[in-house]
Image 1 (spheres, protein in one colour):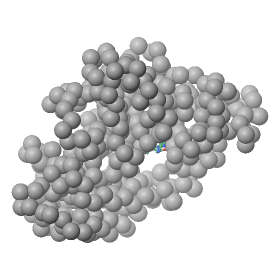
Image 2 (spheres, rainbow, N blue to C red; image 1 turned 180 degrees about the horizontal axis):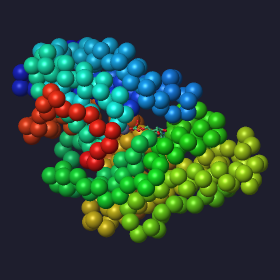
Image 3 (cartoon, rainbow, N blue to C red; image 1 turned 30 degrees about the horizontal axis):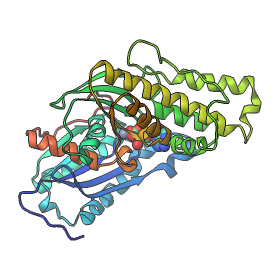
Image 4 (cartoon, rainbow, N blue to C red; image 1 turned 180 degrees about the vertical axis):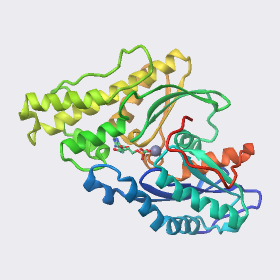
Amino acid sequence: MQNNYYKSDINILGIETSCDDTCAAVVQNGSKILSNVVASQNYIHEKYGGVVPELASRKHIEVITIIIKEALEQSGLGLKDISAVSVTNRPGLVGSLLVGVGAAKSISYGAKIPLVAVNHLKAHLYSNILINPEQEGGFIGLIVSGGHSSLYVIGCDWSISEIGHTVDDAAGEAFDKIARFLNLGYPGGPVIDKLAREGNPSIIELPRPMLDSGDFNFSFSGLKTALIYRTRRNPEIMSKENIPHLVASFQESVVDVLVEKTIRACLEFKFNEILVSGGVAANSRLREKFEIKAKENNIEVHIPPIPLCMDNAAMVACLGYHEFMRGNFSNLDVDVYSRSDI
Ligand code: KG4
Ligand code: ZN
């Protein structure tokens, strides 16, 4: 790939291995994606219905070097052109995080370039800045993924504070568990999204958990239990023709709560823009409902293109660029953390 590279350009190599995707990317000046490579491990974990941490870290070890080389090759740059290496070091599966952080430390030491360790959740929010660098705060941010469902207030200076989170399962986790219960495959989100298009969400009624809890928290595990009880009481809704209605109803309930509470937060905190990211932000009904509800309330909703909603290293490189410009570098003894607030 031919790349017009000027010495003043800041090229960040991003590395992301917090869960089950091995990702590397090169981003120029915080917003120009020169490469964005993702090696999915879905084919390994699907038979277990969820990510098996030990298998995930072993696969990361196998492919990390190949993926980083591929990202550099596709970018048209060499290591000598890279200004810093940015890597996710929190939150995530410790064994998986260690592989990415180990690789980033080696590159930083060997190529004598700064290391920037970043927060995965913050990187998800920055995926919006990656595609629209001119965007200025403040915003309400919603991260909905397999591990998180949280709401944030984002100040004009990009200071981020959490105002709500799930008290039990994350939204993506609920999609995955329901898909597993119904034998639909893994990951559950994309399968349910597709199947729900053939269903009518009004035929089988399900609750809207914590919609009126008076705070900005979420809960999705009770919804899963409600669905399971419904199928026990009425086994006929597990029939082939009823499954699309059942998953459409489940999806509608999750989407209603996420959209409604995010819009309420935006109105209460007097913002007029919302940033959404994380794997569940790929959901077609969520995207559609956000657009409708935002219009009704004169709010602008920004959701990145689907590949940038899912785990990827371009968002890590984008956040790495901003931390680099702020002079926030990490030492080579930086650790990994399974849990971390933003
Ligand atoms: O952000 P992500 O790639 O990884 C985590 O950090 O968790 O999100 C993965 C999650 C999975 O639970 C998956 O089922 C869900 O995102 N997901 C979806 C869709 N695509 C992926 N959920 C609903 N609808 C989708 N289209
Ligand atoms: Zn994620």
